[in-house]
Length: 472
Ligand code: NMX
Ligand code: MLT
Image 1 (cartoon, protein in one colour):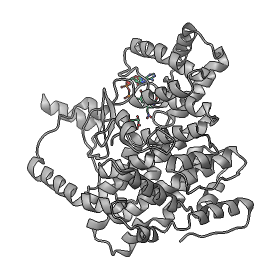
Image 2 (cartoon, helix red, strand yellow; image 1 turned 180 degrees about the vertical axis):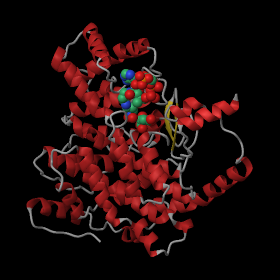
Image 3 (cartoon, helix red, strand yellow; image 1 turned 90 degrees about the vertical axis):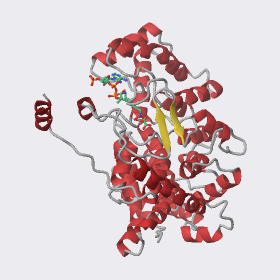
Image 4 (cartoon, helix red, strand yellow; image 1 turned 135 degrees about the horizontal axis):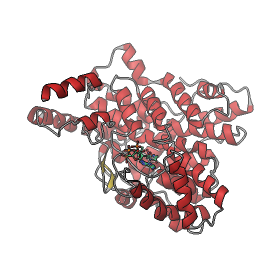
């Protein structure tokens, strides 16, 4: 139940936003859906039994097949290279990069529907692909756009929970707190407490939570942005817009190019197979049958770390510090010195390196292509391009860095900065909004496939010493 209070100007604006989305009740929405072809949940209902059978067959026929050996290095080294998770929505190749349900980023850009006057894929299309494994039609994507806009009502207490924090607190703290407050409406938690849903049907309330969460996070994220940087002048959702366009609009950026950037941004940051810190955290927490809000909040807390999602903030701040010290037209020699200075002070070069990738991240490449098309003369873009030439040889020279190439975060900040979204501390929130698509899609599948509680075995150094002694 959504609760409205119209006491202040902000509350009135919020209420307007909520009223515009007053059809958010998902049951009502489903009544309005005339064709199951256009209804994502009906499509999933058809696909799920096939996939359940597939998993059963894999287990019974191949359950005892070995996938590799676990070495001590792997145990001590953050489980790098250890295959240990099932993740259906995307798969990462060390050289090629990410594939969403088998499709590379350029393929997604080619086949996923775009906005009427745009070229970049609509994130709703990617969500459909992640959930069903099928490329949606334009009509299916339009229906999903409308469904998400109708689900986007955010209860007033969510804003109050955020308002309880100092406006100077980190945007990720405010965002994650907002997501936790959204949890009050969890349909999964309600269903579980009432005890009237059989576990084979857990995916259904999970689906409702997941779609509501995906719909609502841009509203919460925009609220945090406008609260922090725009005197709390809140911009209500426009339900005639698509997901990415709307997010850009609510943040206060209405240029067609920024909306296109947002569509691309949300699409490419959505998922990166199952082992990265944020999605793994979400999946782990979800495996305890914690609902999607609890799971996604956990994921956000992982994303907020500087070695993971916070790197996009760190990159822009670092680039700005380069400019502050050396100016925009810095030479390659000066840039080399600056990189060495960073490394010699015991810091990492943000935006470079990766736990799995061993080549330039295709998410970097597609952002570079966007920049070459729309902002080729931007001085910060040119600096980013110069870094692409300067940093990899230096990291290679260090001798220990496994991947000297840039990752997704090396590029995103300068694009946002160019369109006026200059507040670097906010950038990880954008990443977080996008990641809701991947994490929530897999959570639905986790429940549909009945995946178990995640509980790997740990050992201590004494155990390892004893093991080695016995082996000798
Ligand atoms: N700058 C300096 N040193 C680096 C870098 C870098 N960009 N990347 C790796 N190293 C170091 C790393 O710190 C480690 O040093 P030590 O043995 O002294 O601890 C050594 O090289 C070996 O690390 P790798 O095995 O190459 O990398 P790992 O898988 O452990 O870590 C990252 C991956 C992404 C954490 C690491 O490359 C890094 O810190 N990059 C900079 C931060 C960043 O851009 N993170 C964003 C990743 C993408 N994302 O969005 O999550
Ligand atoms: C991600 O998008 O999650 C990052 O590239 C980190 C990773 O995949 O390990």
